[in-house]
Image 1: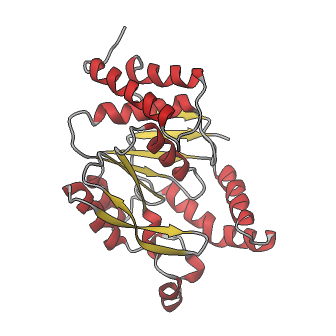
Image 2 (image 1 turned 60 degrees about the vertical axis):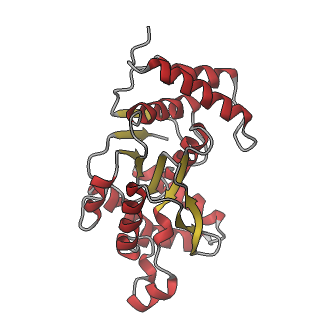
Image 3 (image 1 turned 30 degrees about the horizontal axis):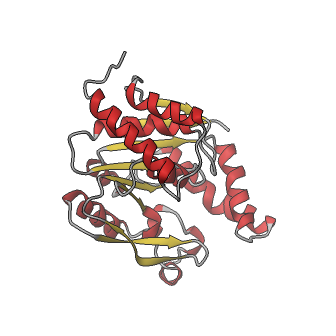
Length: 268
């Protein structure tokens, strides 16, 4: 039996989503079981959950999990023109993977991913401030600029240019993407969106919904090692960077996080 009062709209939306996924050239190929899970999540599931134990990896995801999370977001956004979702978690948690997966599931053109990483201070700034060795820590971001951007997005301002961090060059590219006026679902992702410290806690009222990707510390350390080796660092250099920079950032996120609307527990 369908439990949701807006089940008719949900069914239409589910069909639109499945169609857009199957028809979009950039979408991943789905199995019949994926499509069934997707339809079921949108129409039949109880979506009142606030915790989810998932199997999402840093480079892959389970379609049924993504469908359930997308369904929850959709139903909560039913009567809003714009819905801003914070996707937070420590370095290596899989925030970008989750954001991209949700973006692919939502109907084409209805969502955009806004990465906080675009507000990294340039290395030249970090050198002048003596913060180069702490790149990625909260104080190495332009918080005021990021806060202003989220406020502009919430206001519905049309065609907002956003910066995107290019890891291959280790710098941010200005105006590298656009938040169009008709984008309904804004998927903001970053390490510190739920950091319960000033000034970061000022972001909380700007989000309609928040997700925290919770991954064990040991798993994060393994993922970060794979990341840096993949970017060409030697094993010794990667270990030193992780111990001196990444893991302190991980601990800061895990130990000082505000309450999230949904905690996605990833255990391996």
